[in-house]
Image (cartoon, rainbow, N blue to C red):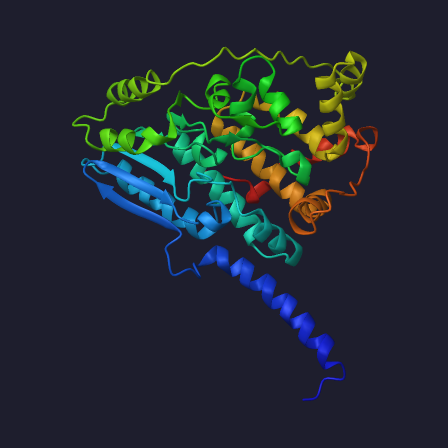
Length: 370
């Protein structure tokens, strides 16, 4: 057959093929190197995130390897401890592979449901694991923040910048963020503020702080423990944390919040300090819909179990997949990188409480179940 517009036809097919390949990459590895390494070292199960070129971003293929392995080790009488780490030195795990999920959502592919559903089930498995679980070089939130022992180093960078891409701090963010001291969690959730190094532990996101050069020794000592009880693991981690020199005290940041939601911006502007002005400027660039969803998410999550929070967040994820801001945010921040998203609605005042409430509505038989 002869196509009347062969160049246009080929170009269109190539674009579709590119999208399809990105989605299929979630289902199967196209790498020679495995994306996640699963090994047994003595009585320790070791999971290594192995996608350094993309900061060890988590995809569906990796989730489907990690989840059954966690169950297997949990039921294995010869496994006492699980250690999760990342290769490459830059990131433990940069979170979910958002660009692939975005392409799936545009095409109506089931990955937009499957990824969130299976990732949240994995988050819950980590949060309810009775084995001692140690996460080294803490970074990716869903894989790390629900674990019993979370180790940060001076290289650790923690942030949940989802409101900048029309999303919300998911993977159980609605559970752990409201439980940080004061209103720090709400501040981190709305602004995407970055915590670095020791501040990650001071904030309560990590349980321990260890110098990165001592991580190999720490891992070796954990693996060689004859009894990996929570008490013994805690003792080892404490001993490494106690080796850290404290160079200077860090000032405490007090975050206040106000009602109604728009009042946060108004009060920041009225405060007049450089810090307040900067945060007001940051909030003004975020998706107004995401800000309101996130505010309500953390309010509700403060009194819910992790499982109930994940059910709520799955509903929110699917609302974002149905909406506009998520695709526009990913375009502006991750694809075109013009940092100039056109939000719809464009102001907080235009986002109705009814539209926010609808995002929290039950999905019926499509709700997340454990």
